[in-house]
Length: 291
Figure 1 (spheres, one colour):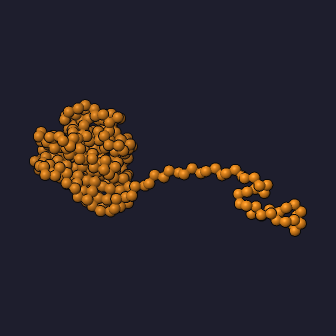
Figure 2 (cartoon, helix red, strand yellow):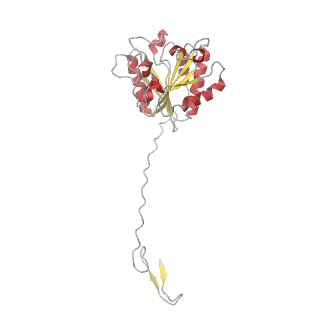
Figure 3 (cartoon, one colour):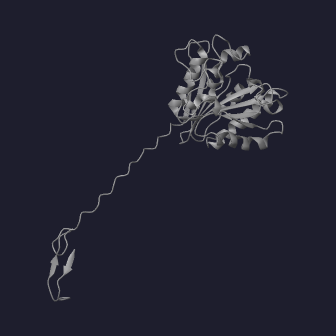
């Protein structure tokens, strides 16, 4: 940098001033340091592909889990079917969902969660327990279904699953029976438990699904937060407690929102129940931009 002495152009000598030094020889104040921003690295998506895993290997309840990765950043969604062996619409729909290819994130499906009960076409067996009353599970339990629920939630933690969709069937339609008629009258309902996406996720699913179905098939939203306290403490205890259903899963896995969908069996063909399950599953996956 050069500066001119008084005297004007050509009237004096040019003085060369060192960089960062003023003409009078004083040091200018040091520039303020700029803080370095902390950057949180974005997780790298799992490469595109399909994983096949076996849950409870070597036991009578051994069953498969299909994990499809898109290779594109997005949420992980888990879908369960066959939790109760006499609810075929749920497991047959889940078998179809297991073939869907996600365009973003990961899709994890266990189509035949209680394979022994499915083969006998009964809800479950006492010696293995009721899977939907045994969350958050226990890997050392003598009840195989309690070990199964633990395996589900461990998978949710492994892949940071954001939504757990549990496909069920009830005999009667919720709208056609008095309130609080019990689990036998929950047909055509969508229920979300404690989790970050509650309560809007169930409402959005119904908004997409209901225009596609008949008046009798309309989905009713139920609040599932009463099945688990906000701190994750289950409501009630013991294998008969509904507070230990999949709707409590969000209280045990950070960032997870559980959703339980029920189709009514009364005067509703199996083929239609499967279609309705697929409609609600697709609605969820479209909301989450997985499909």
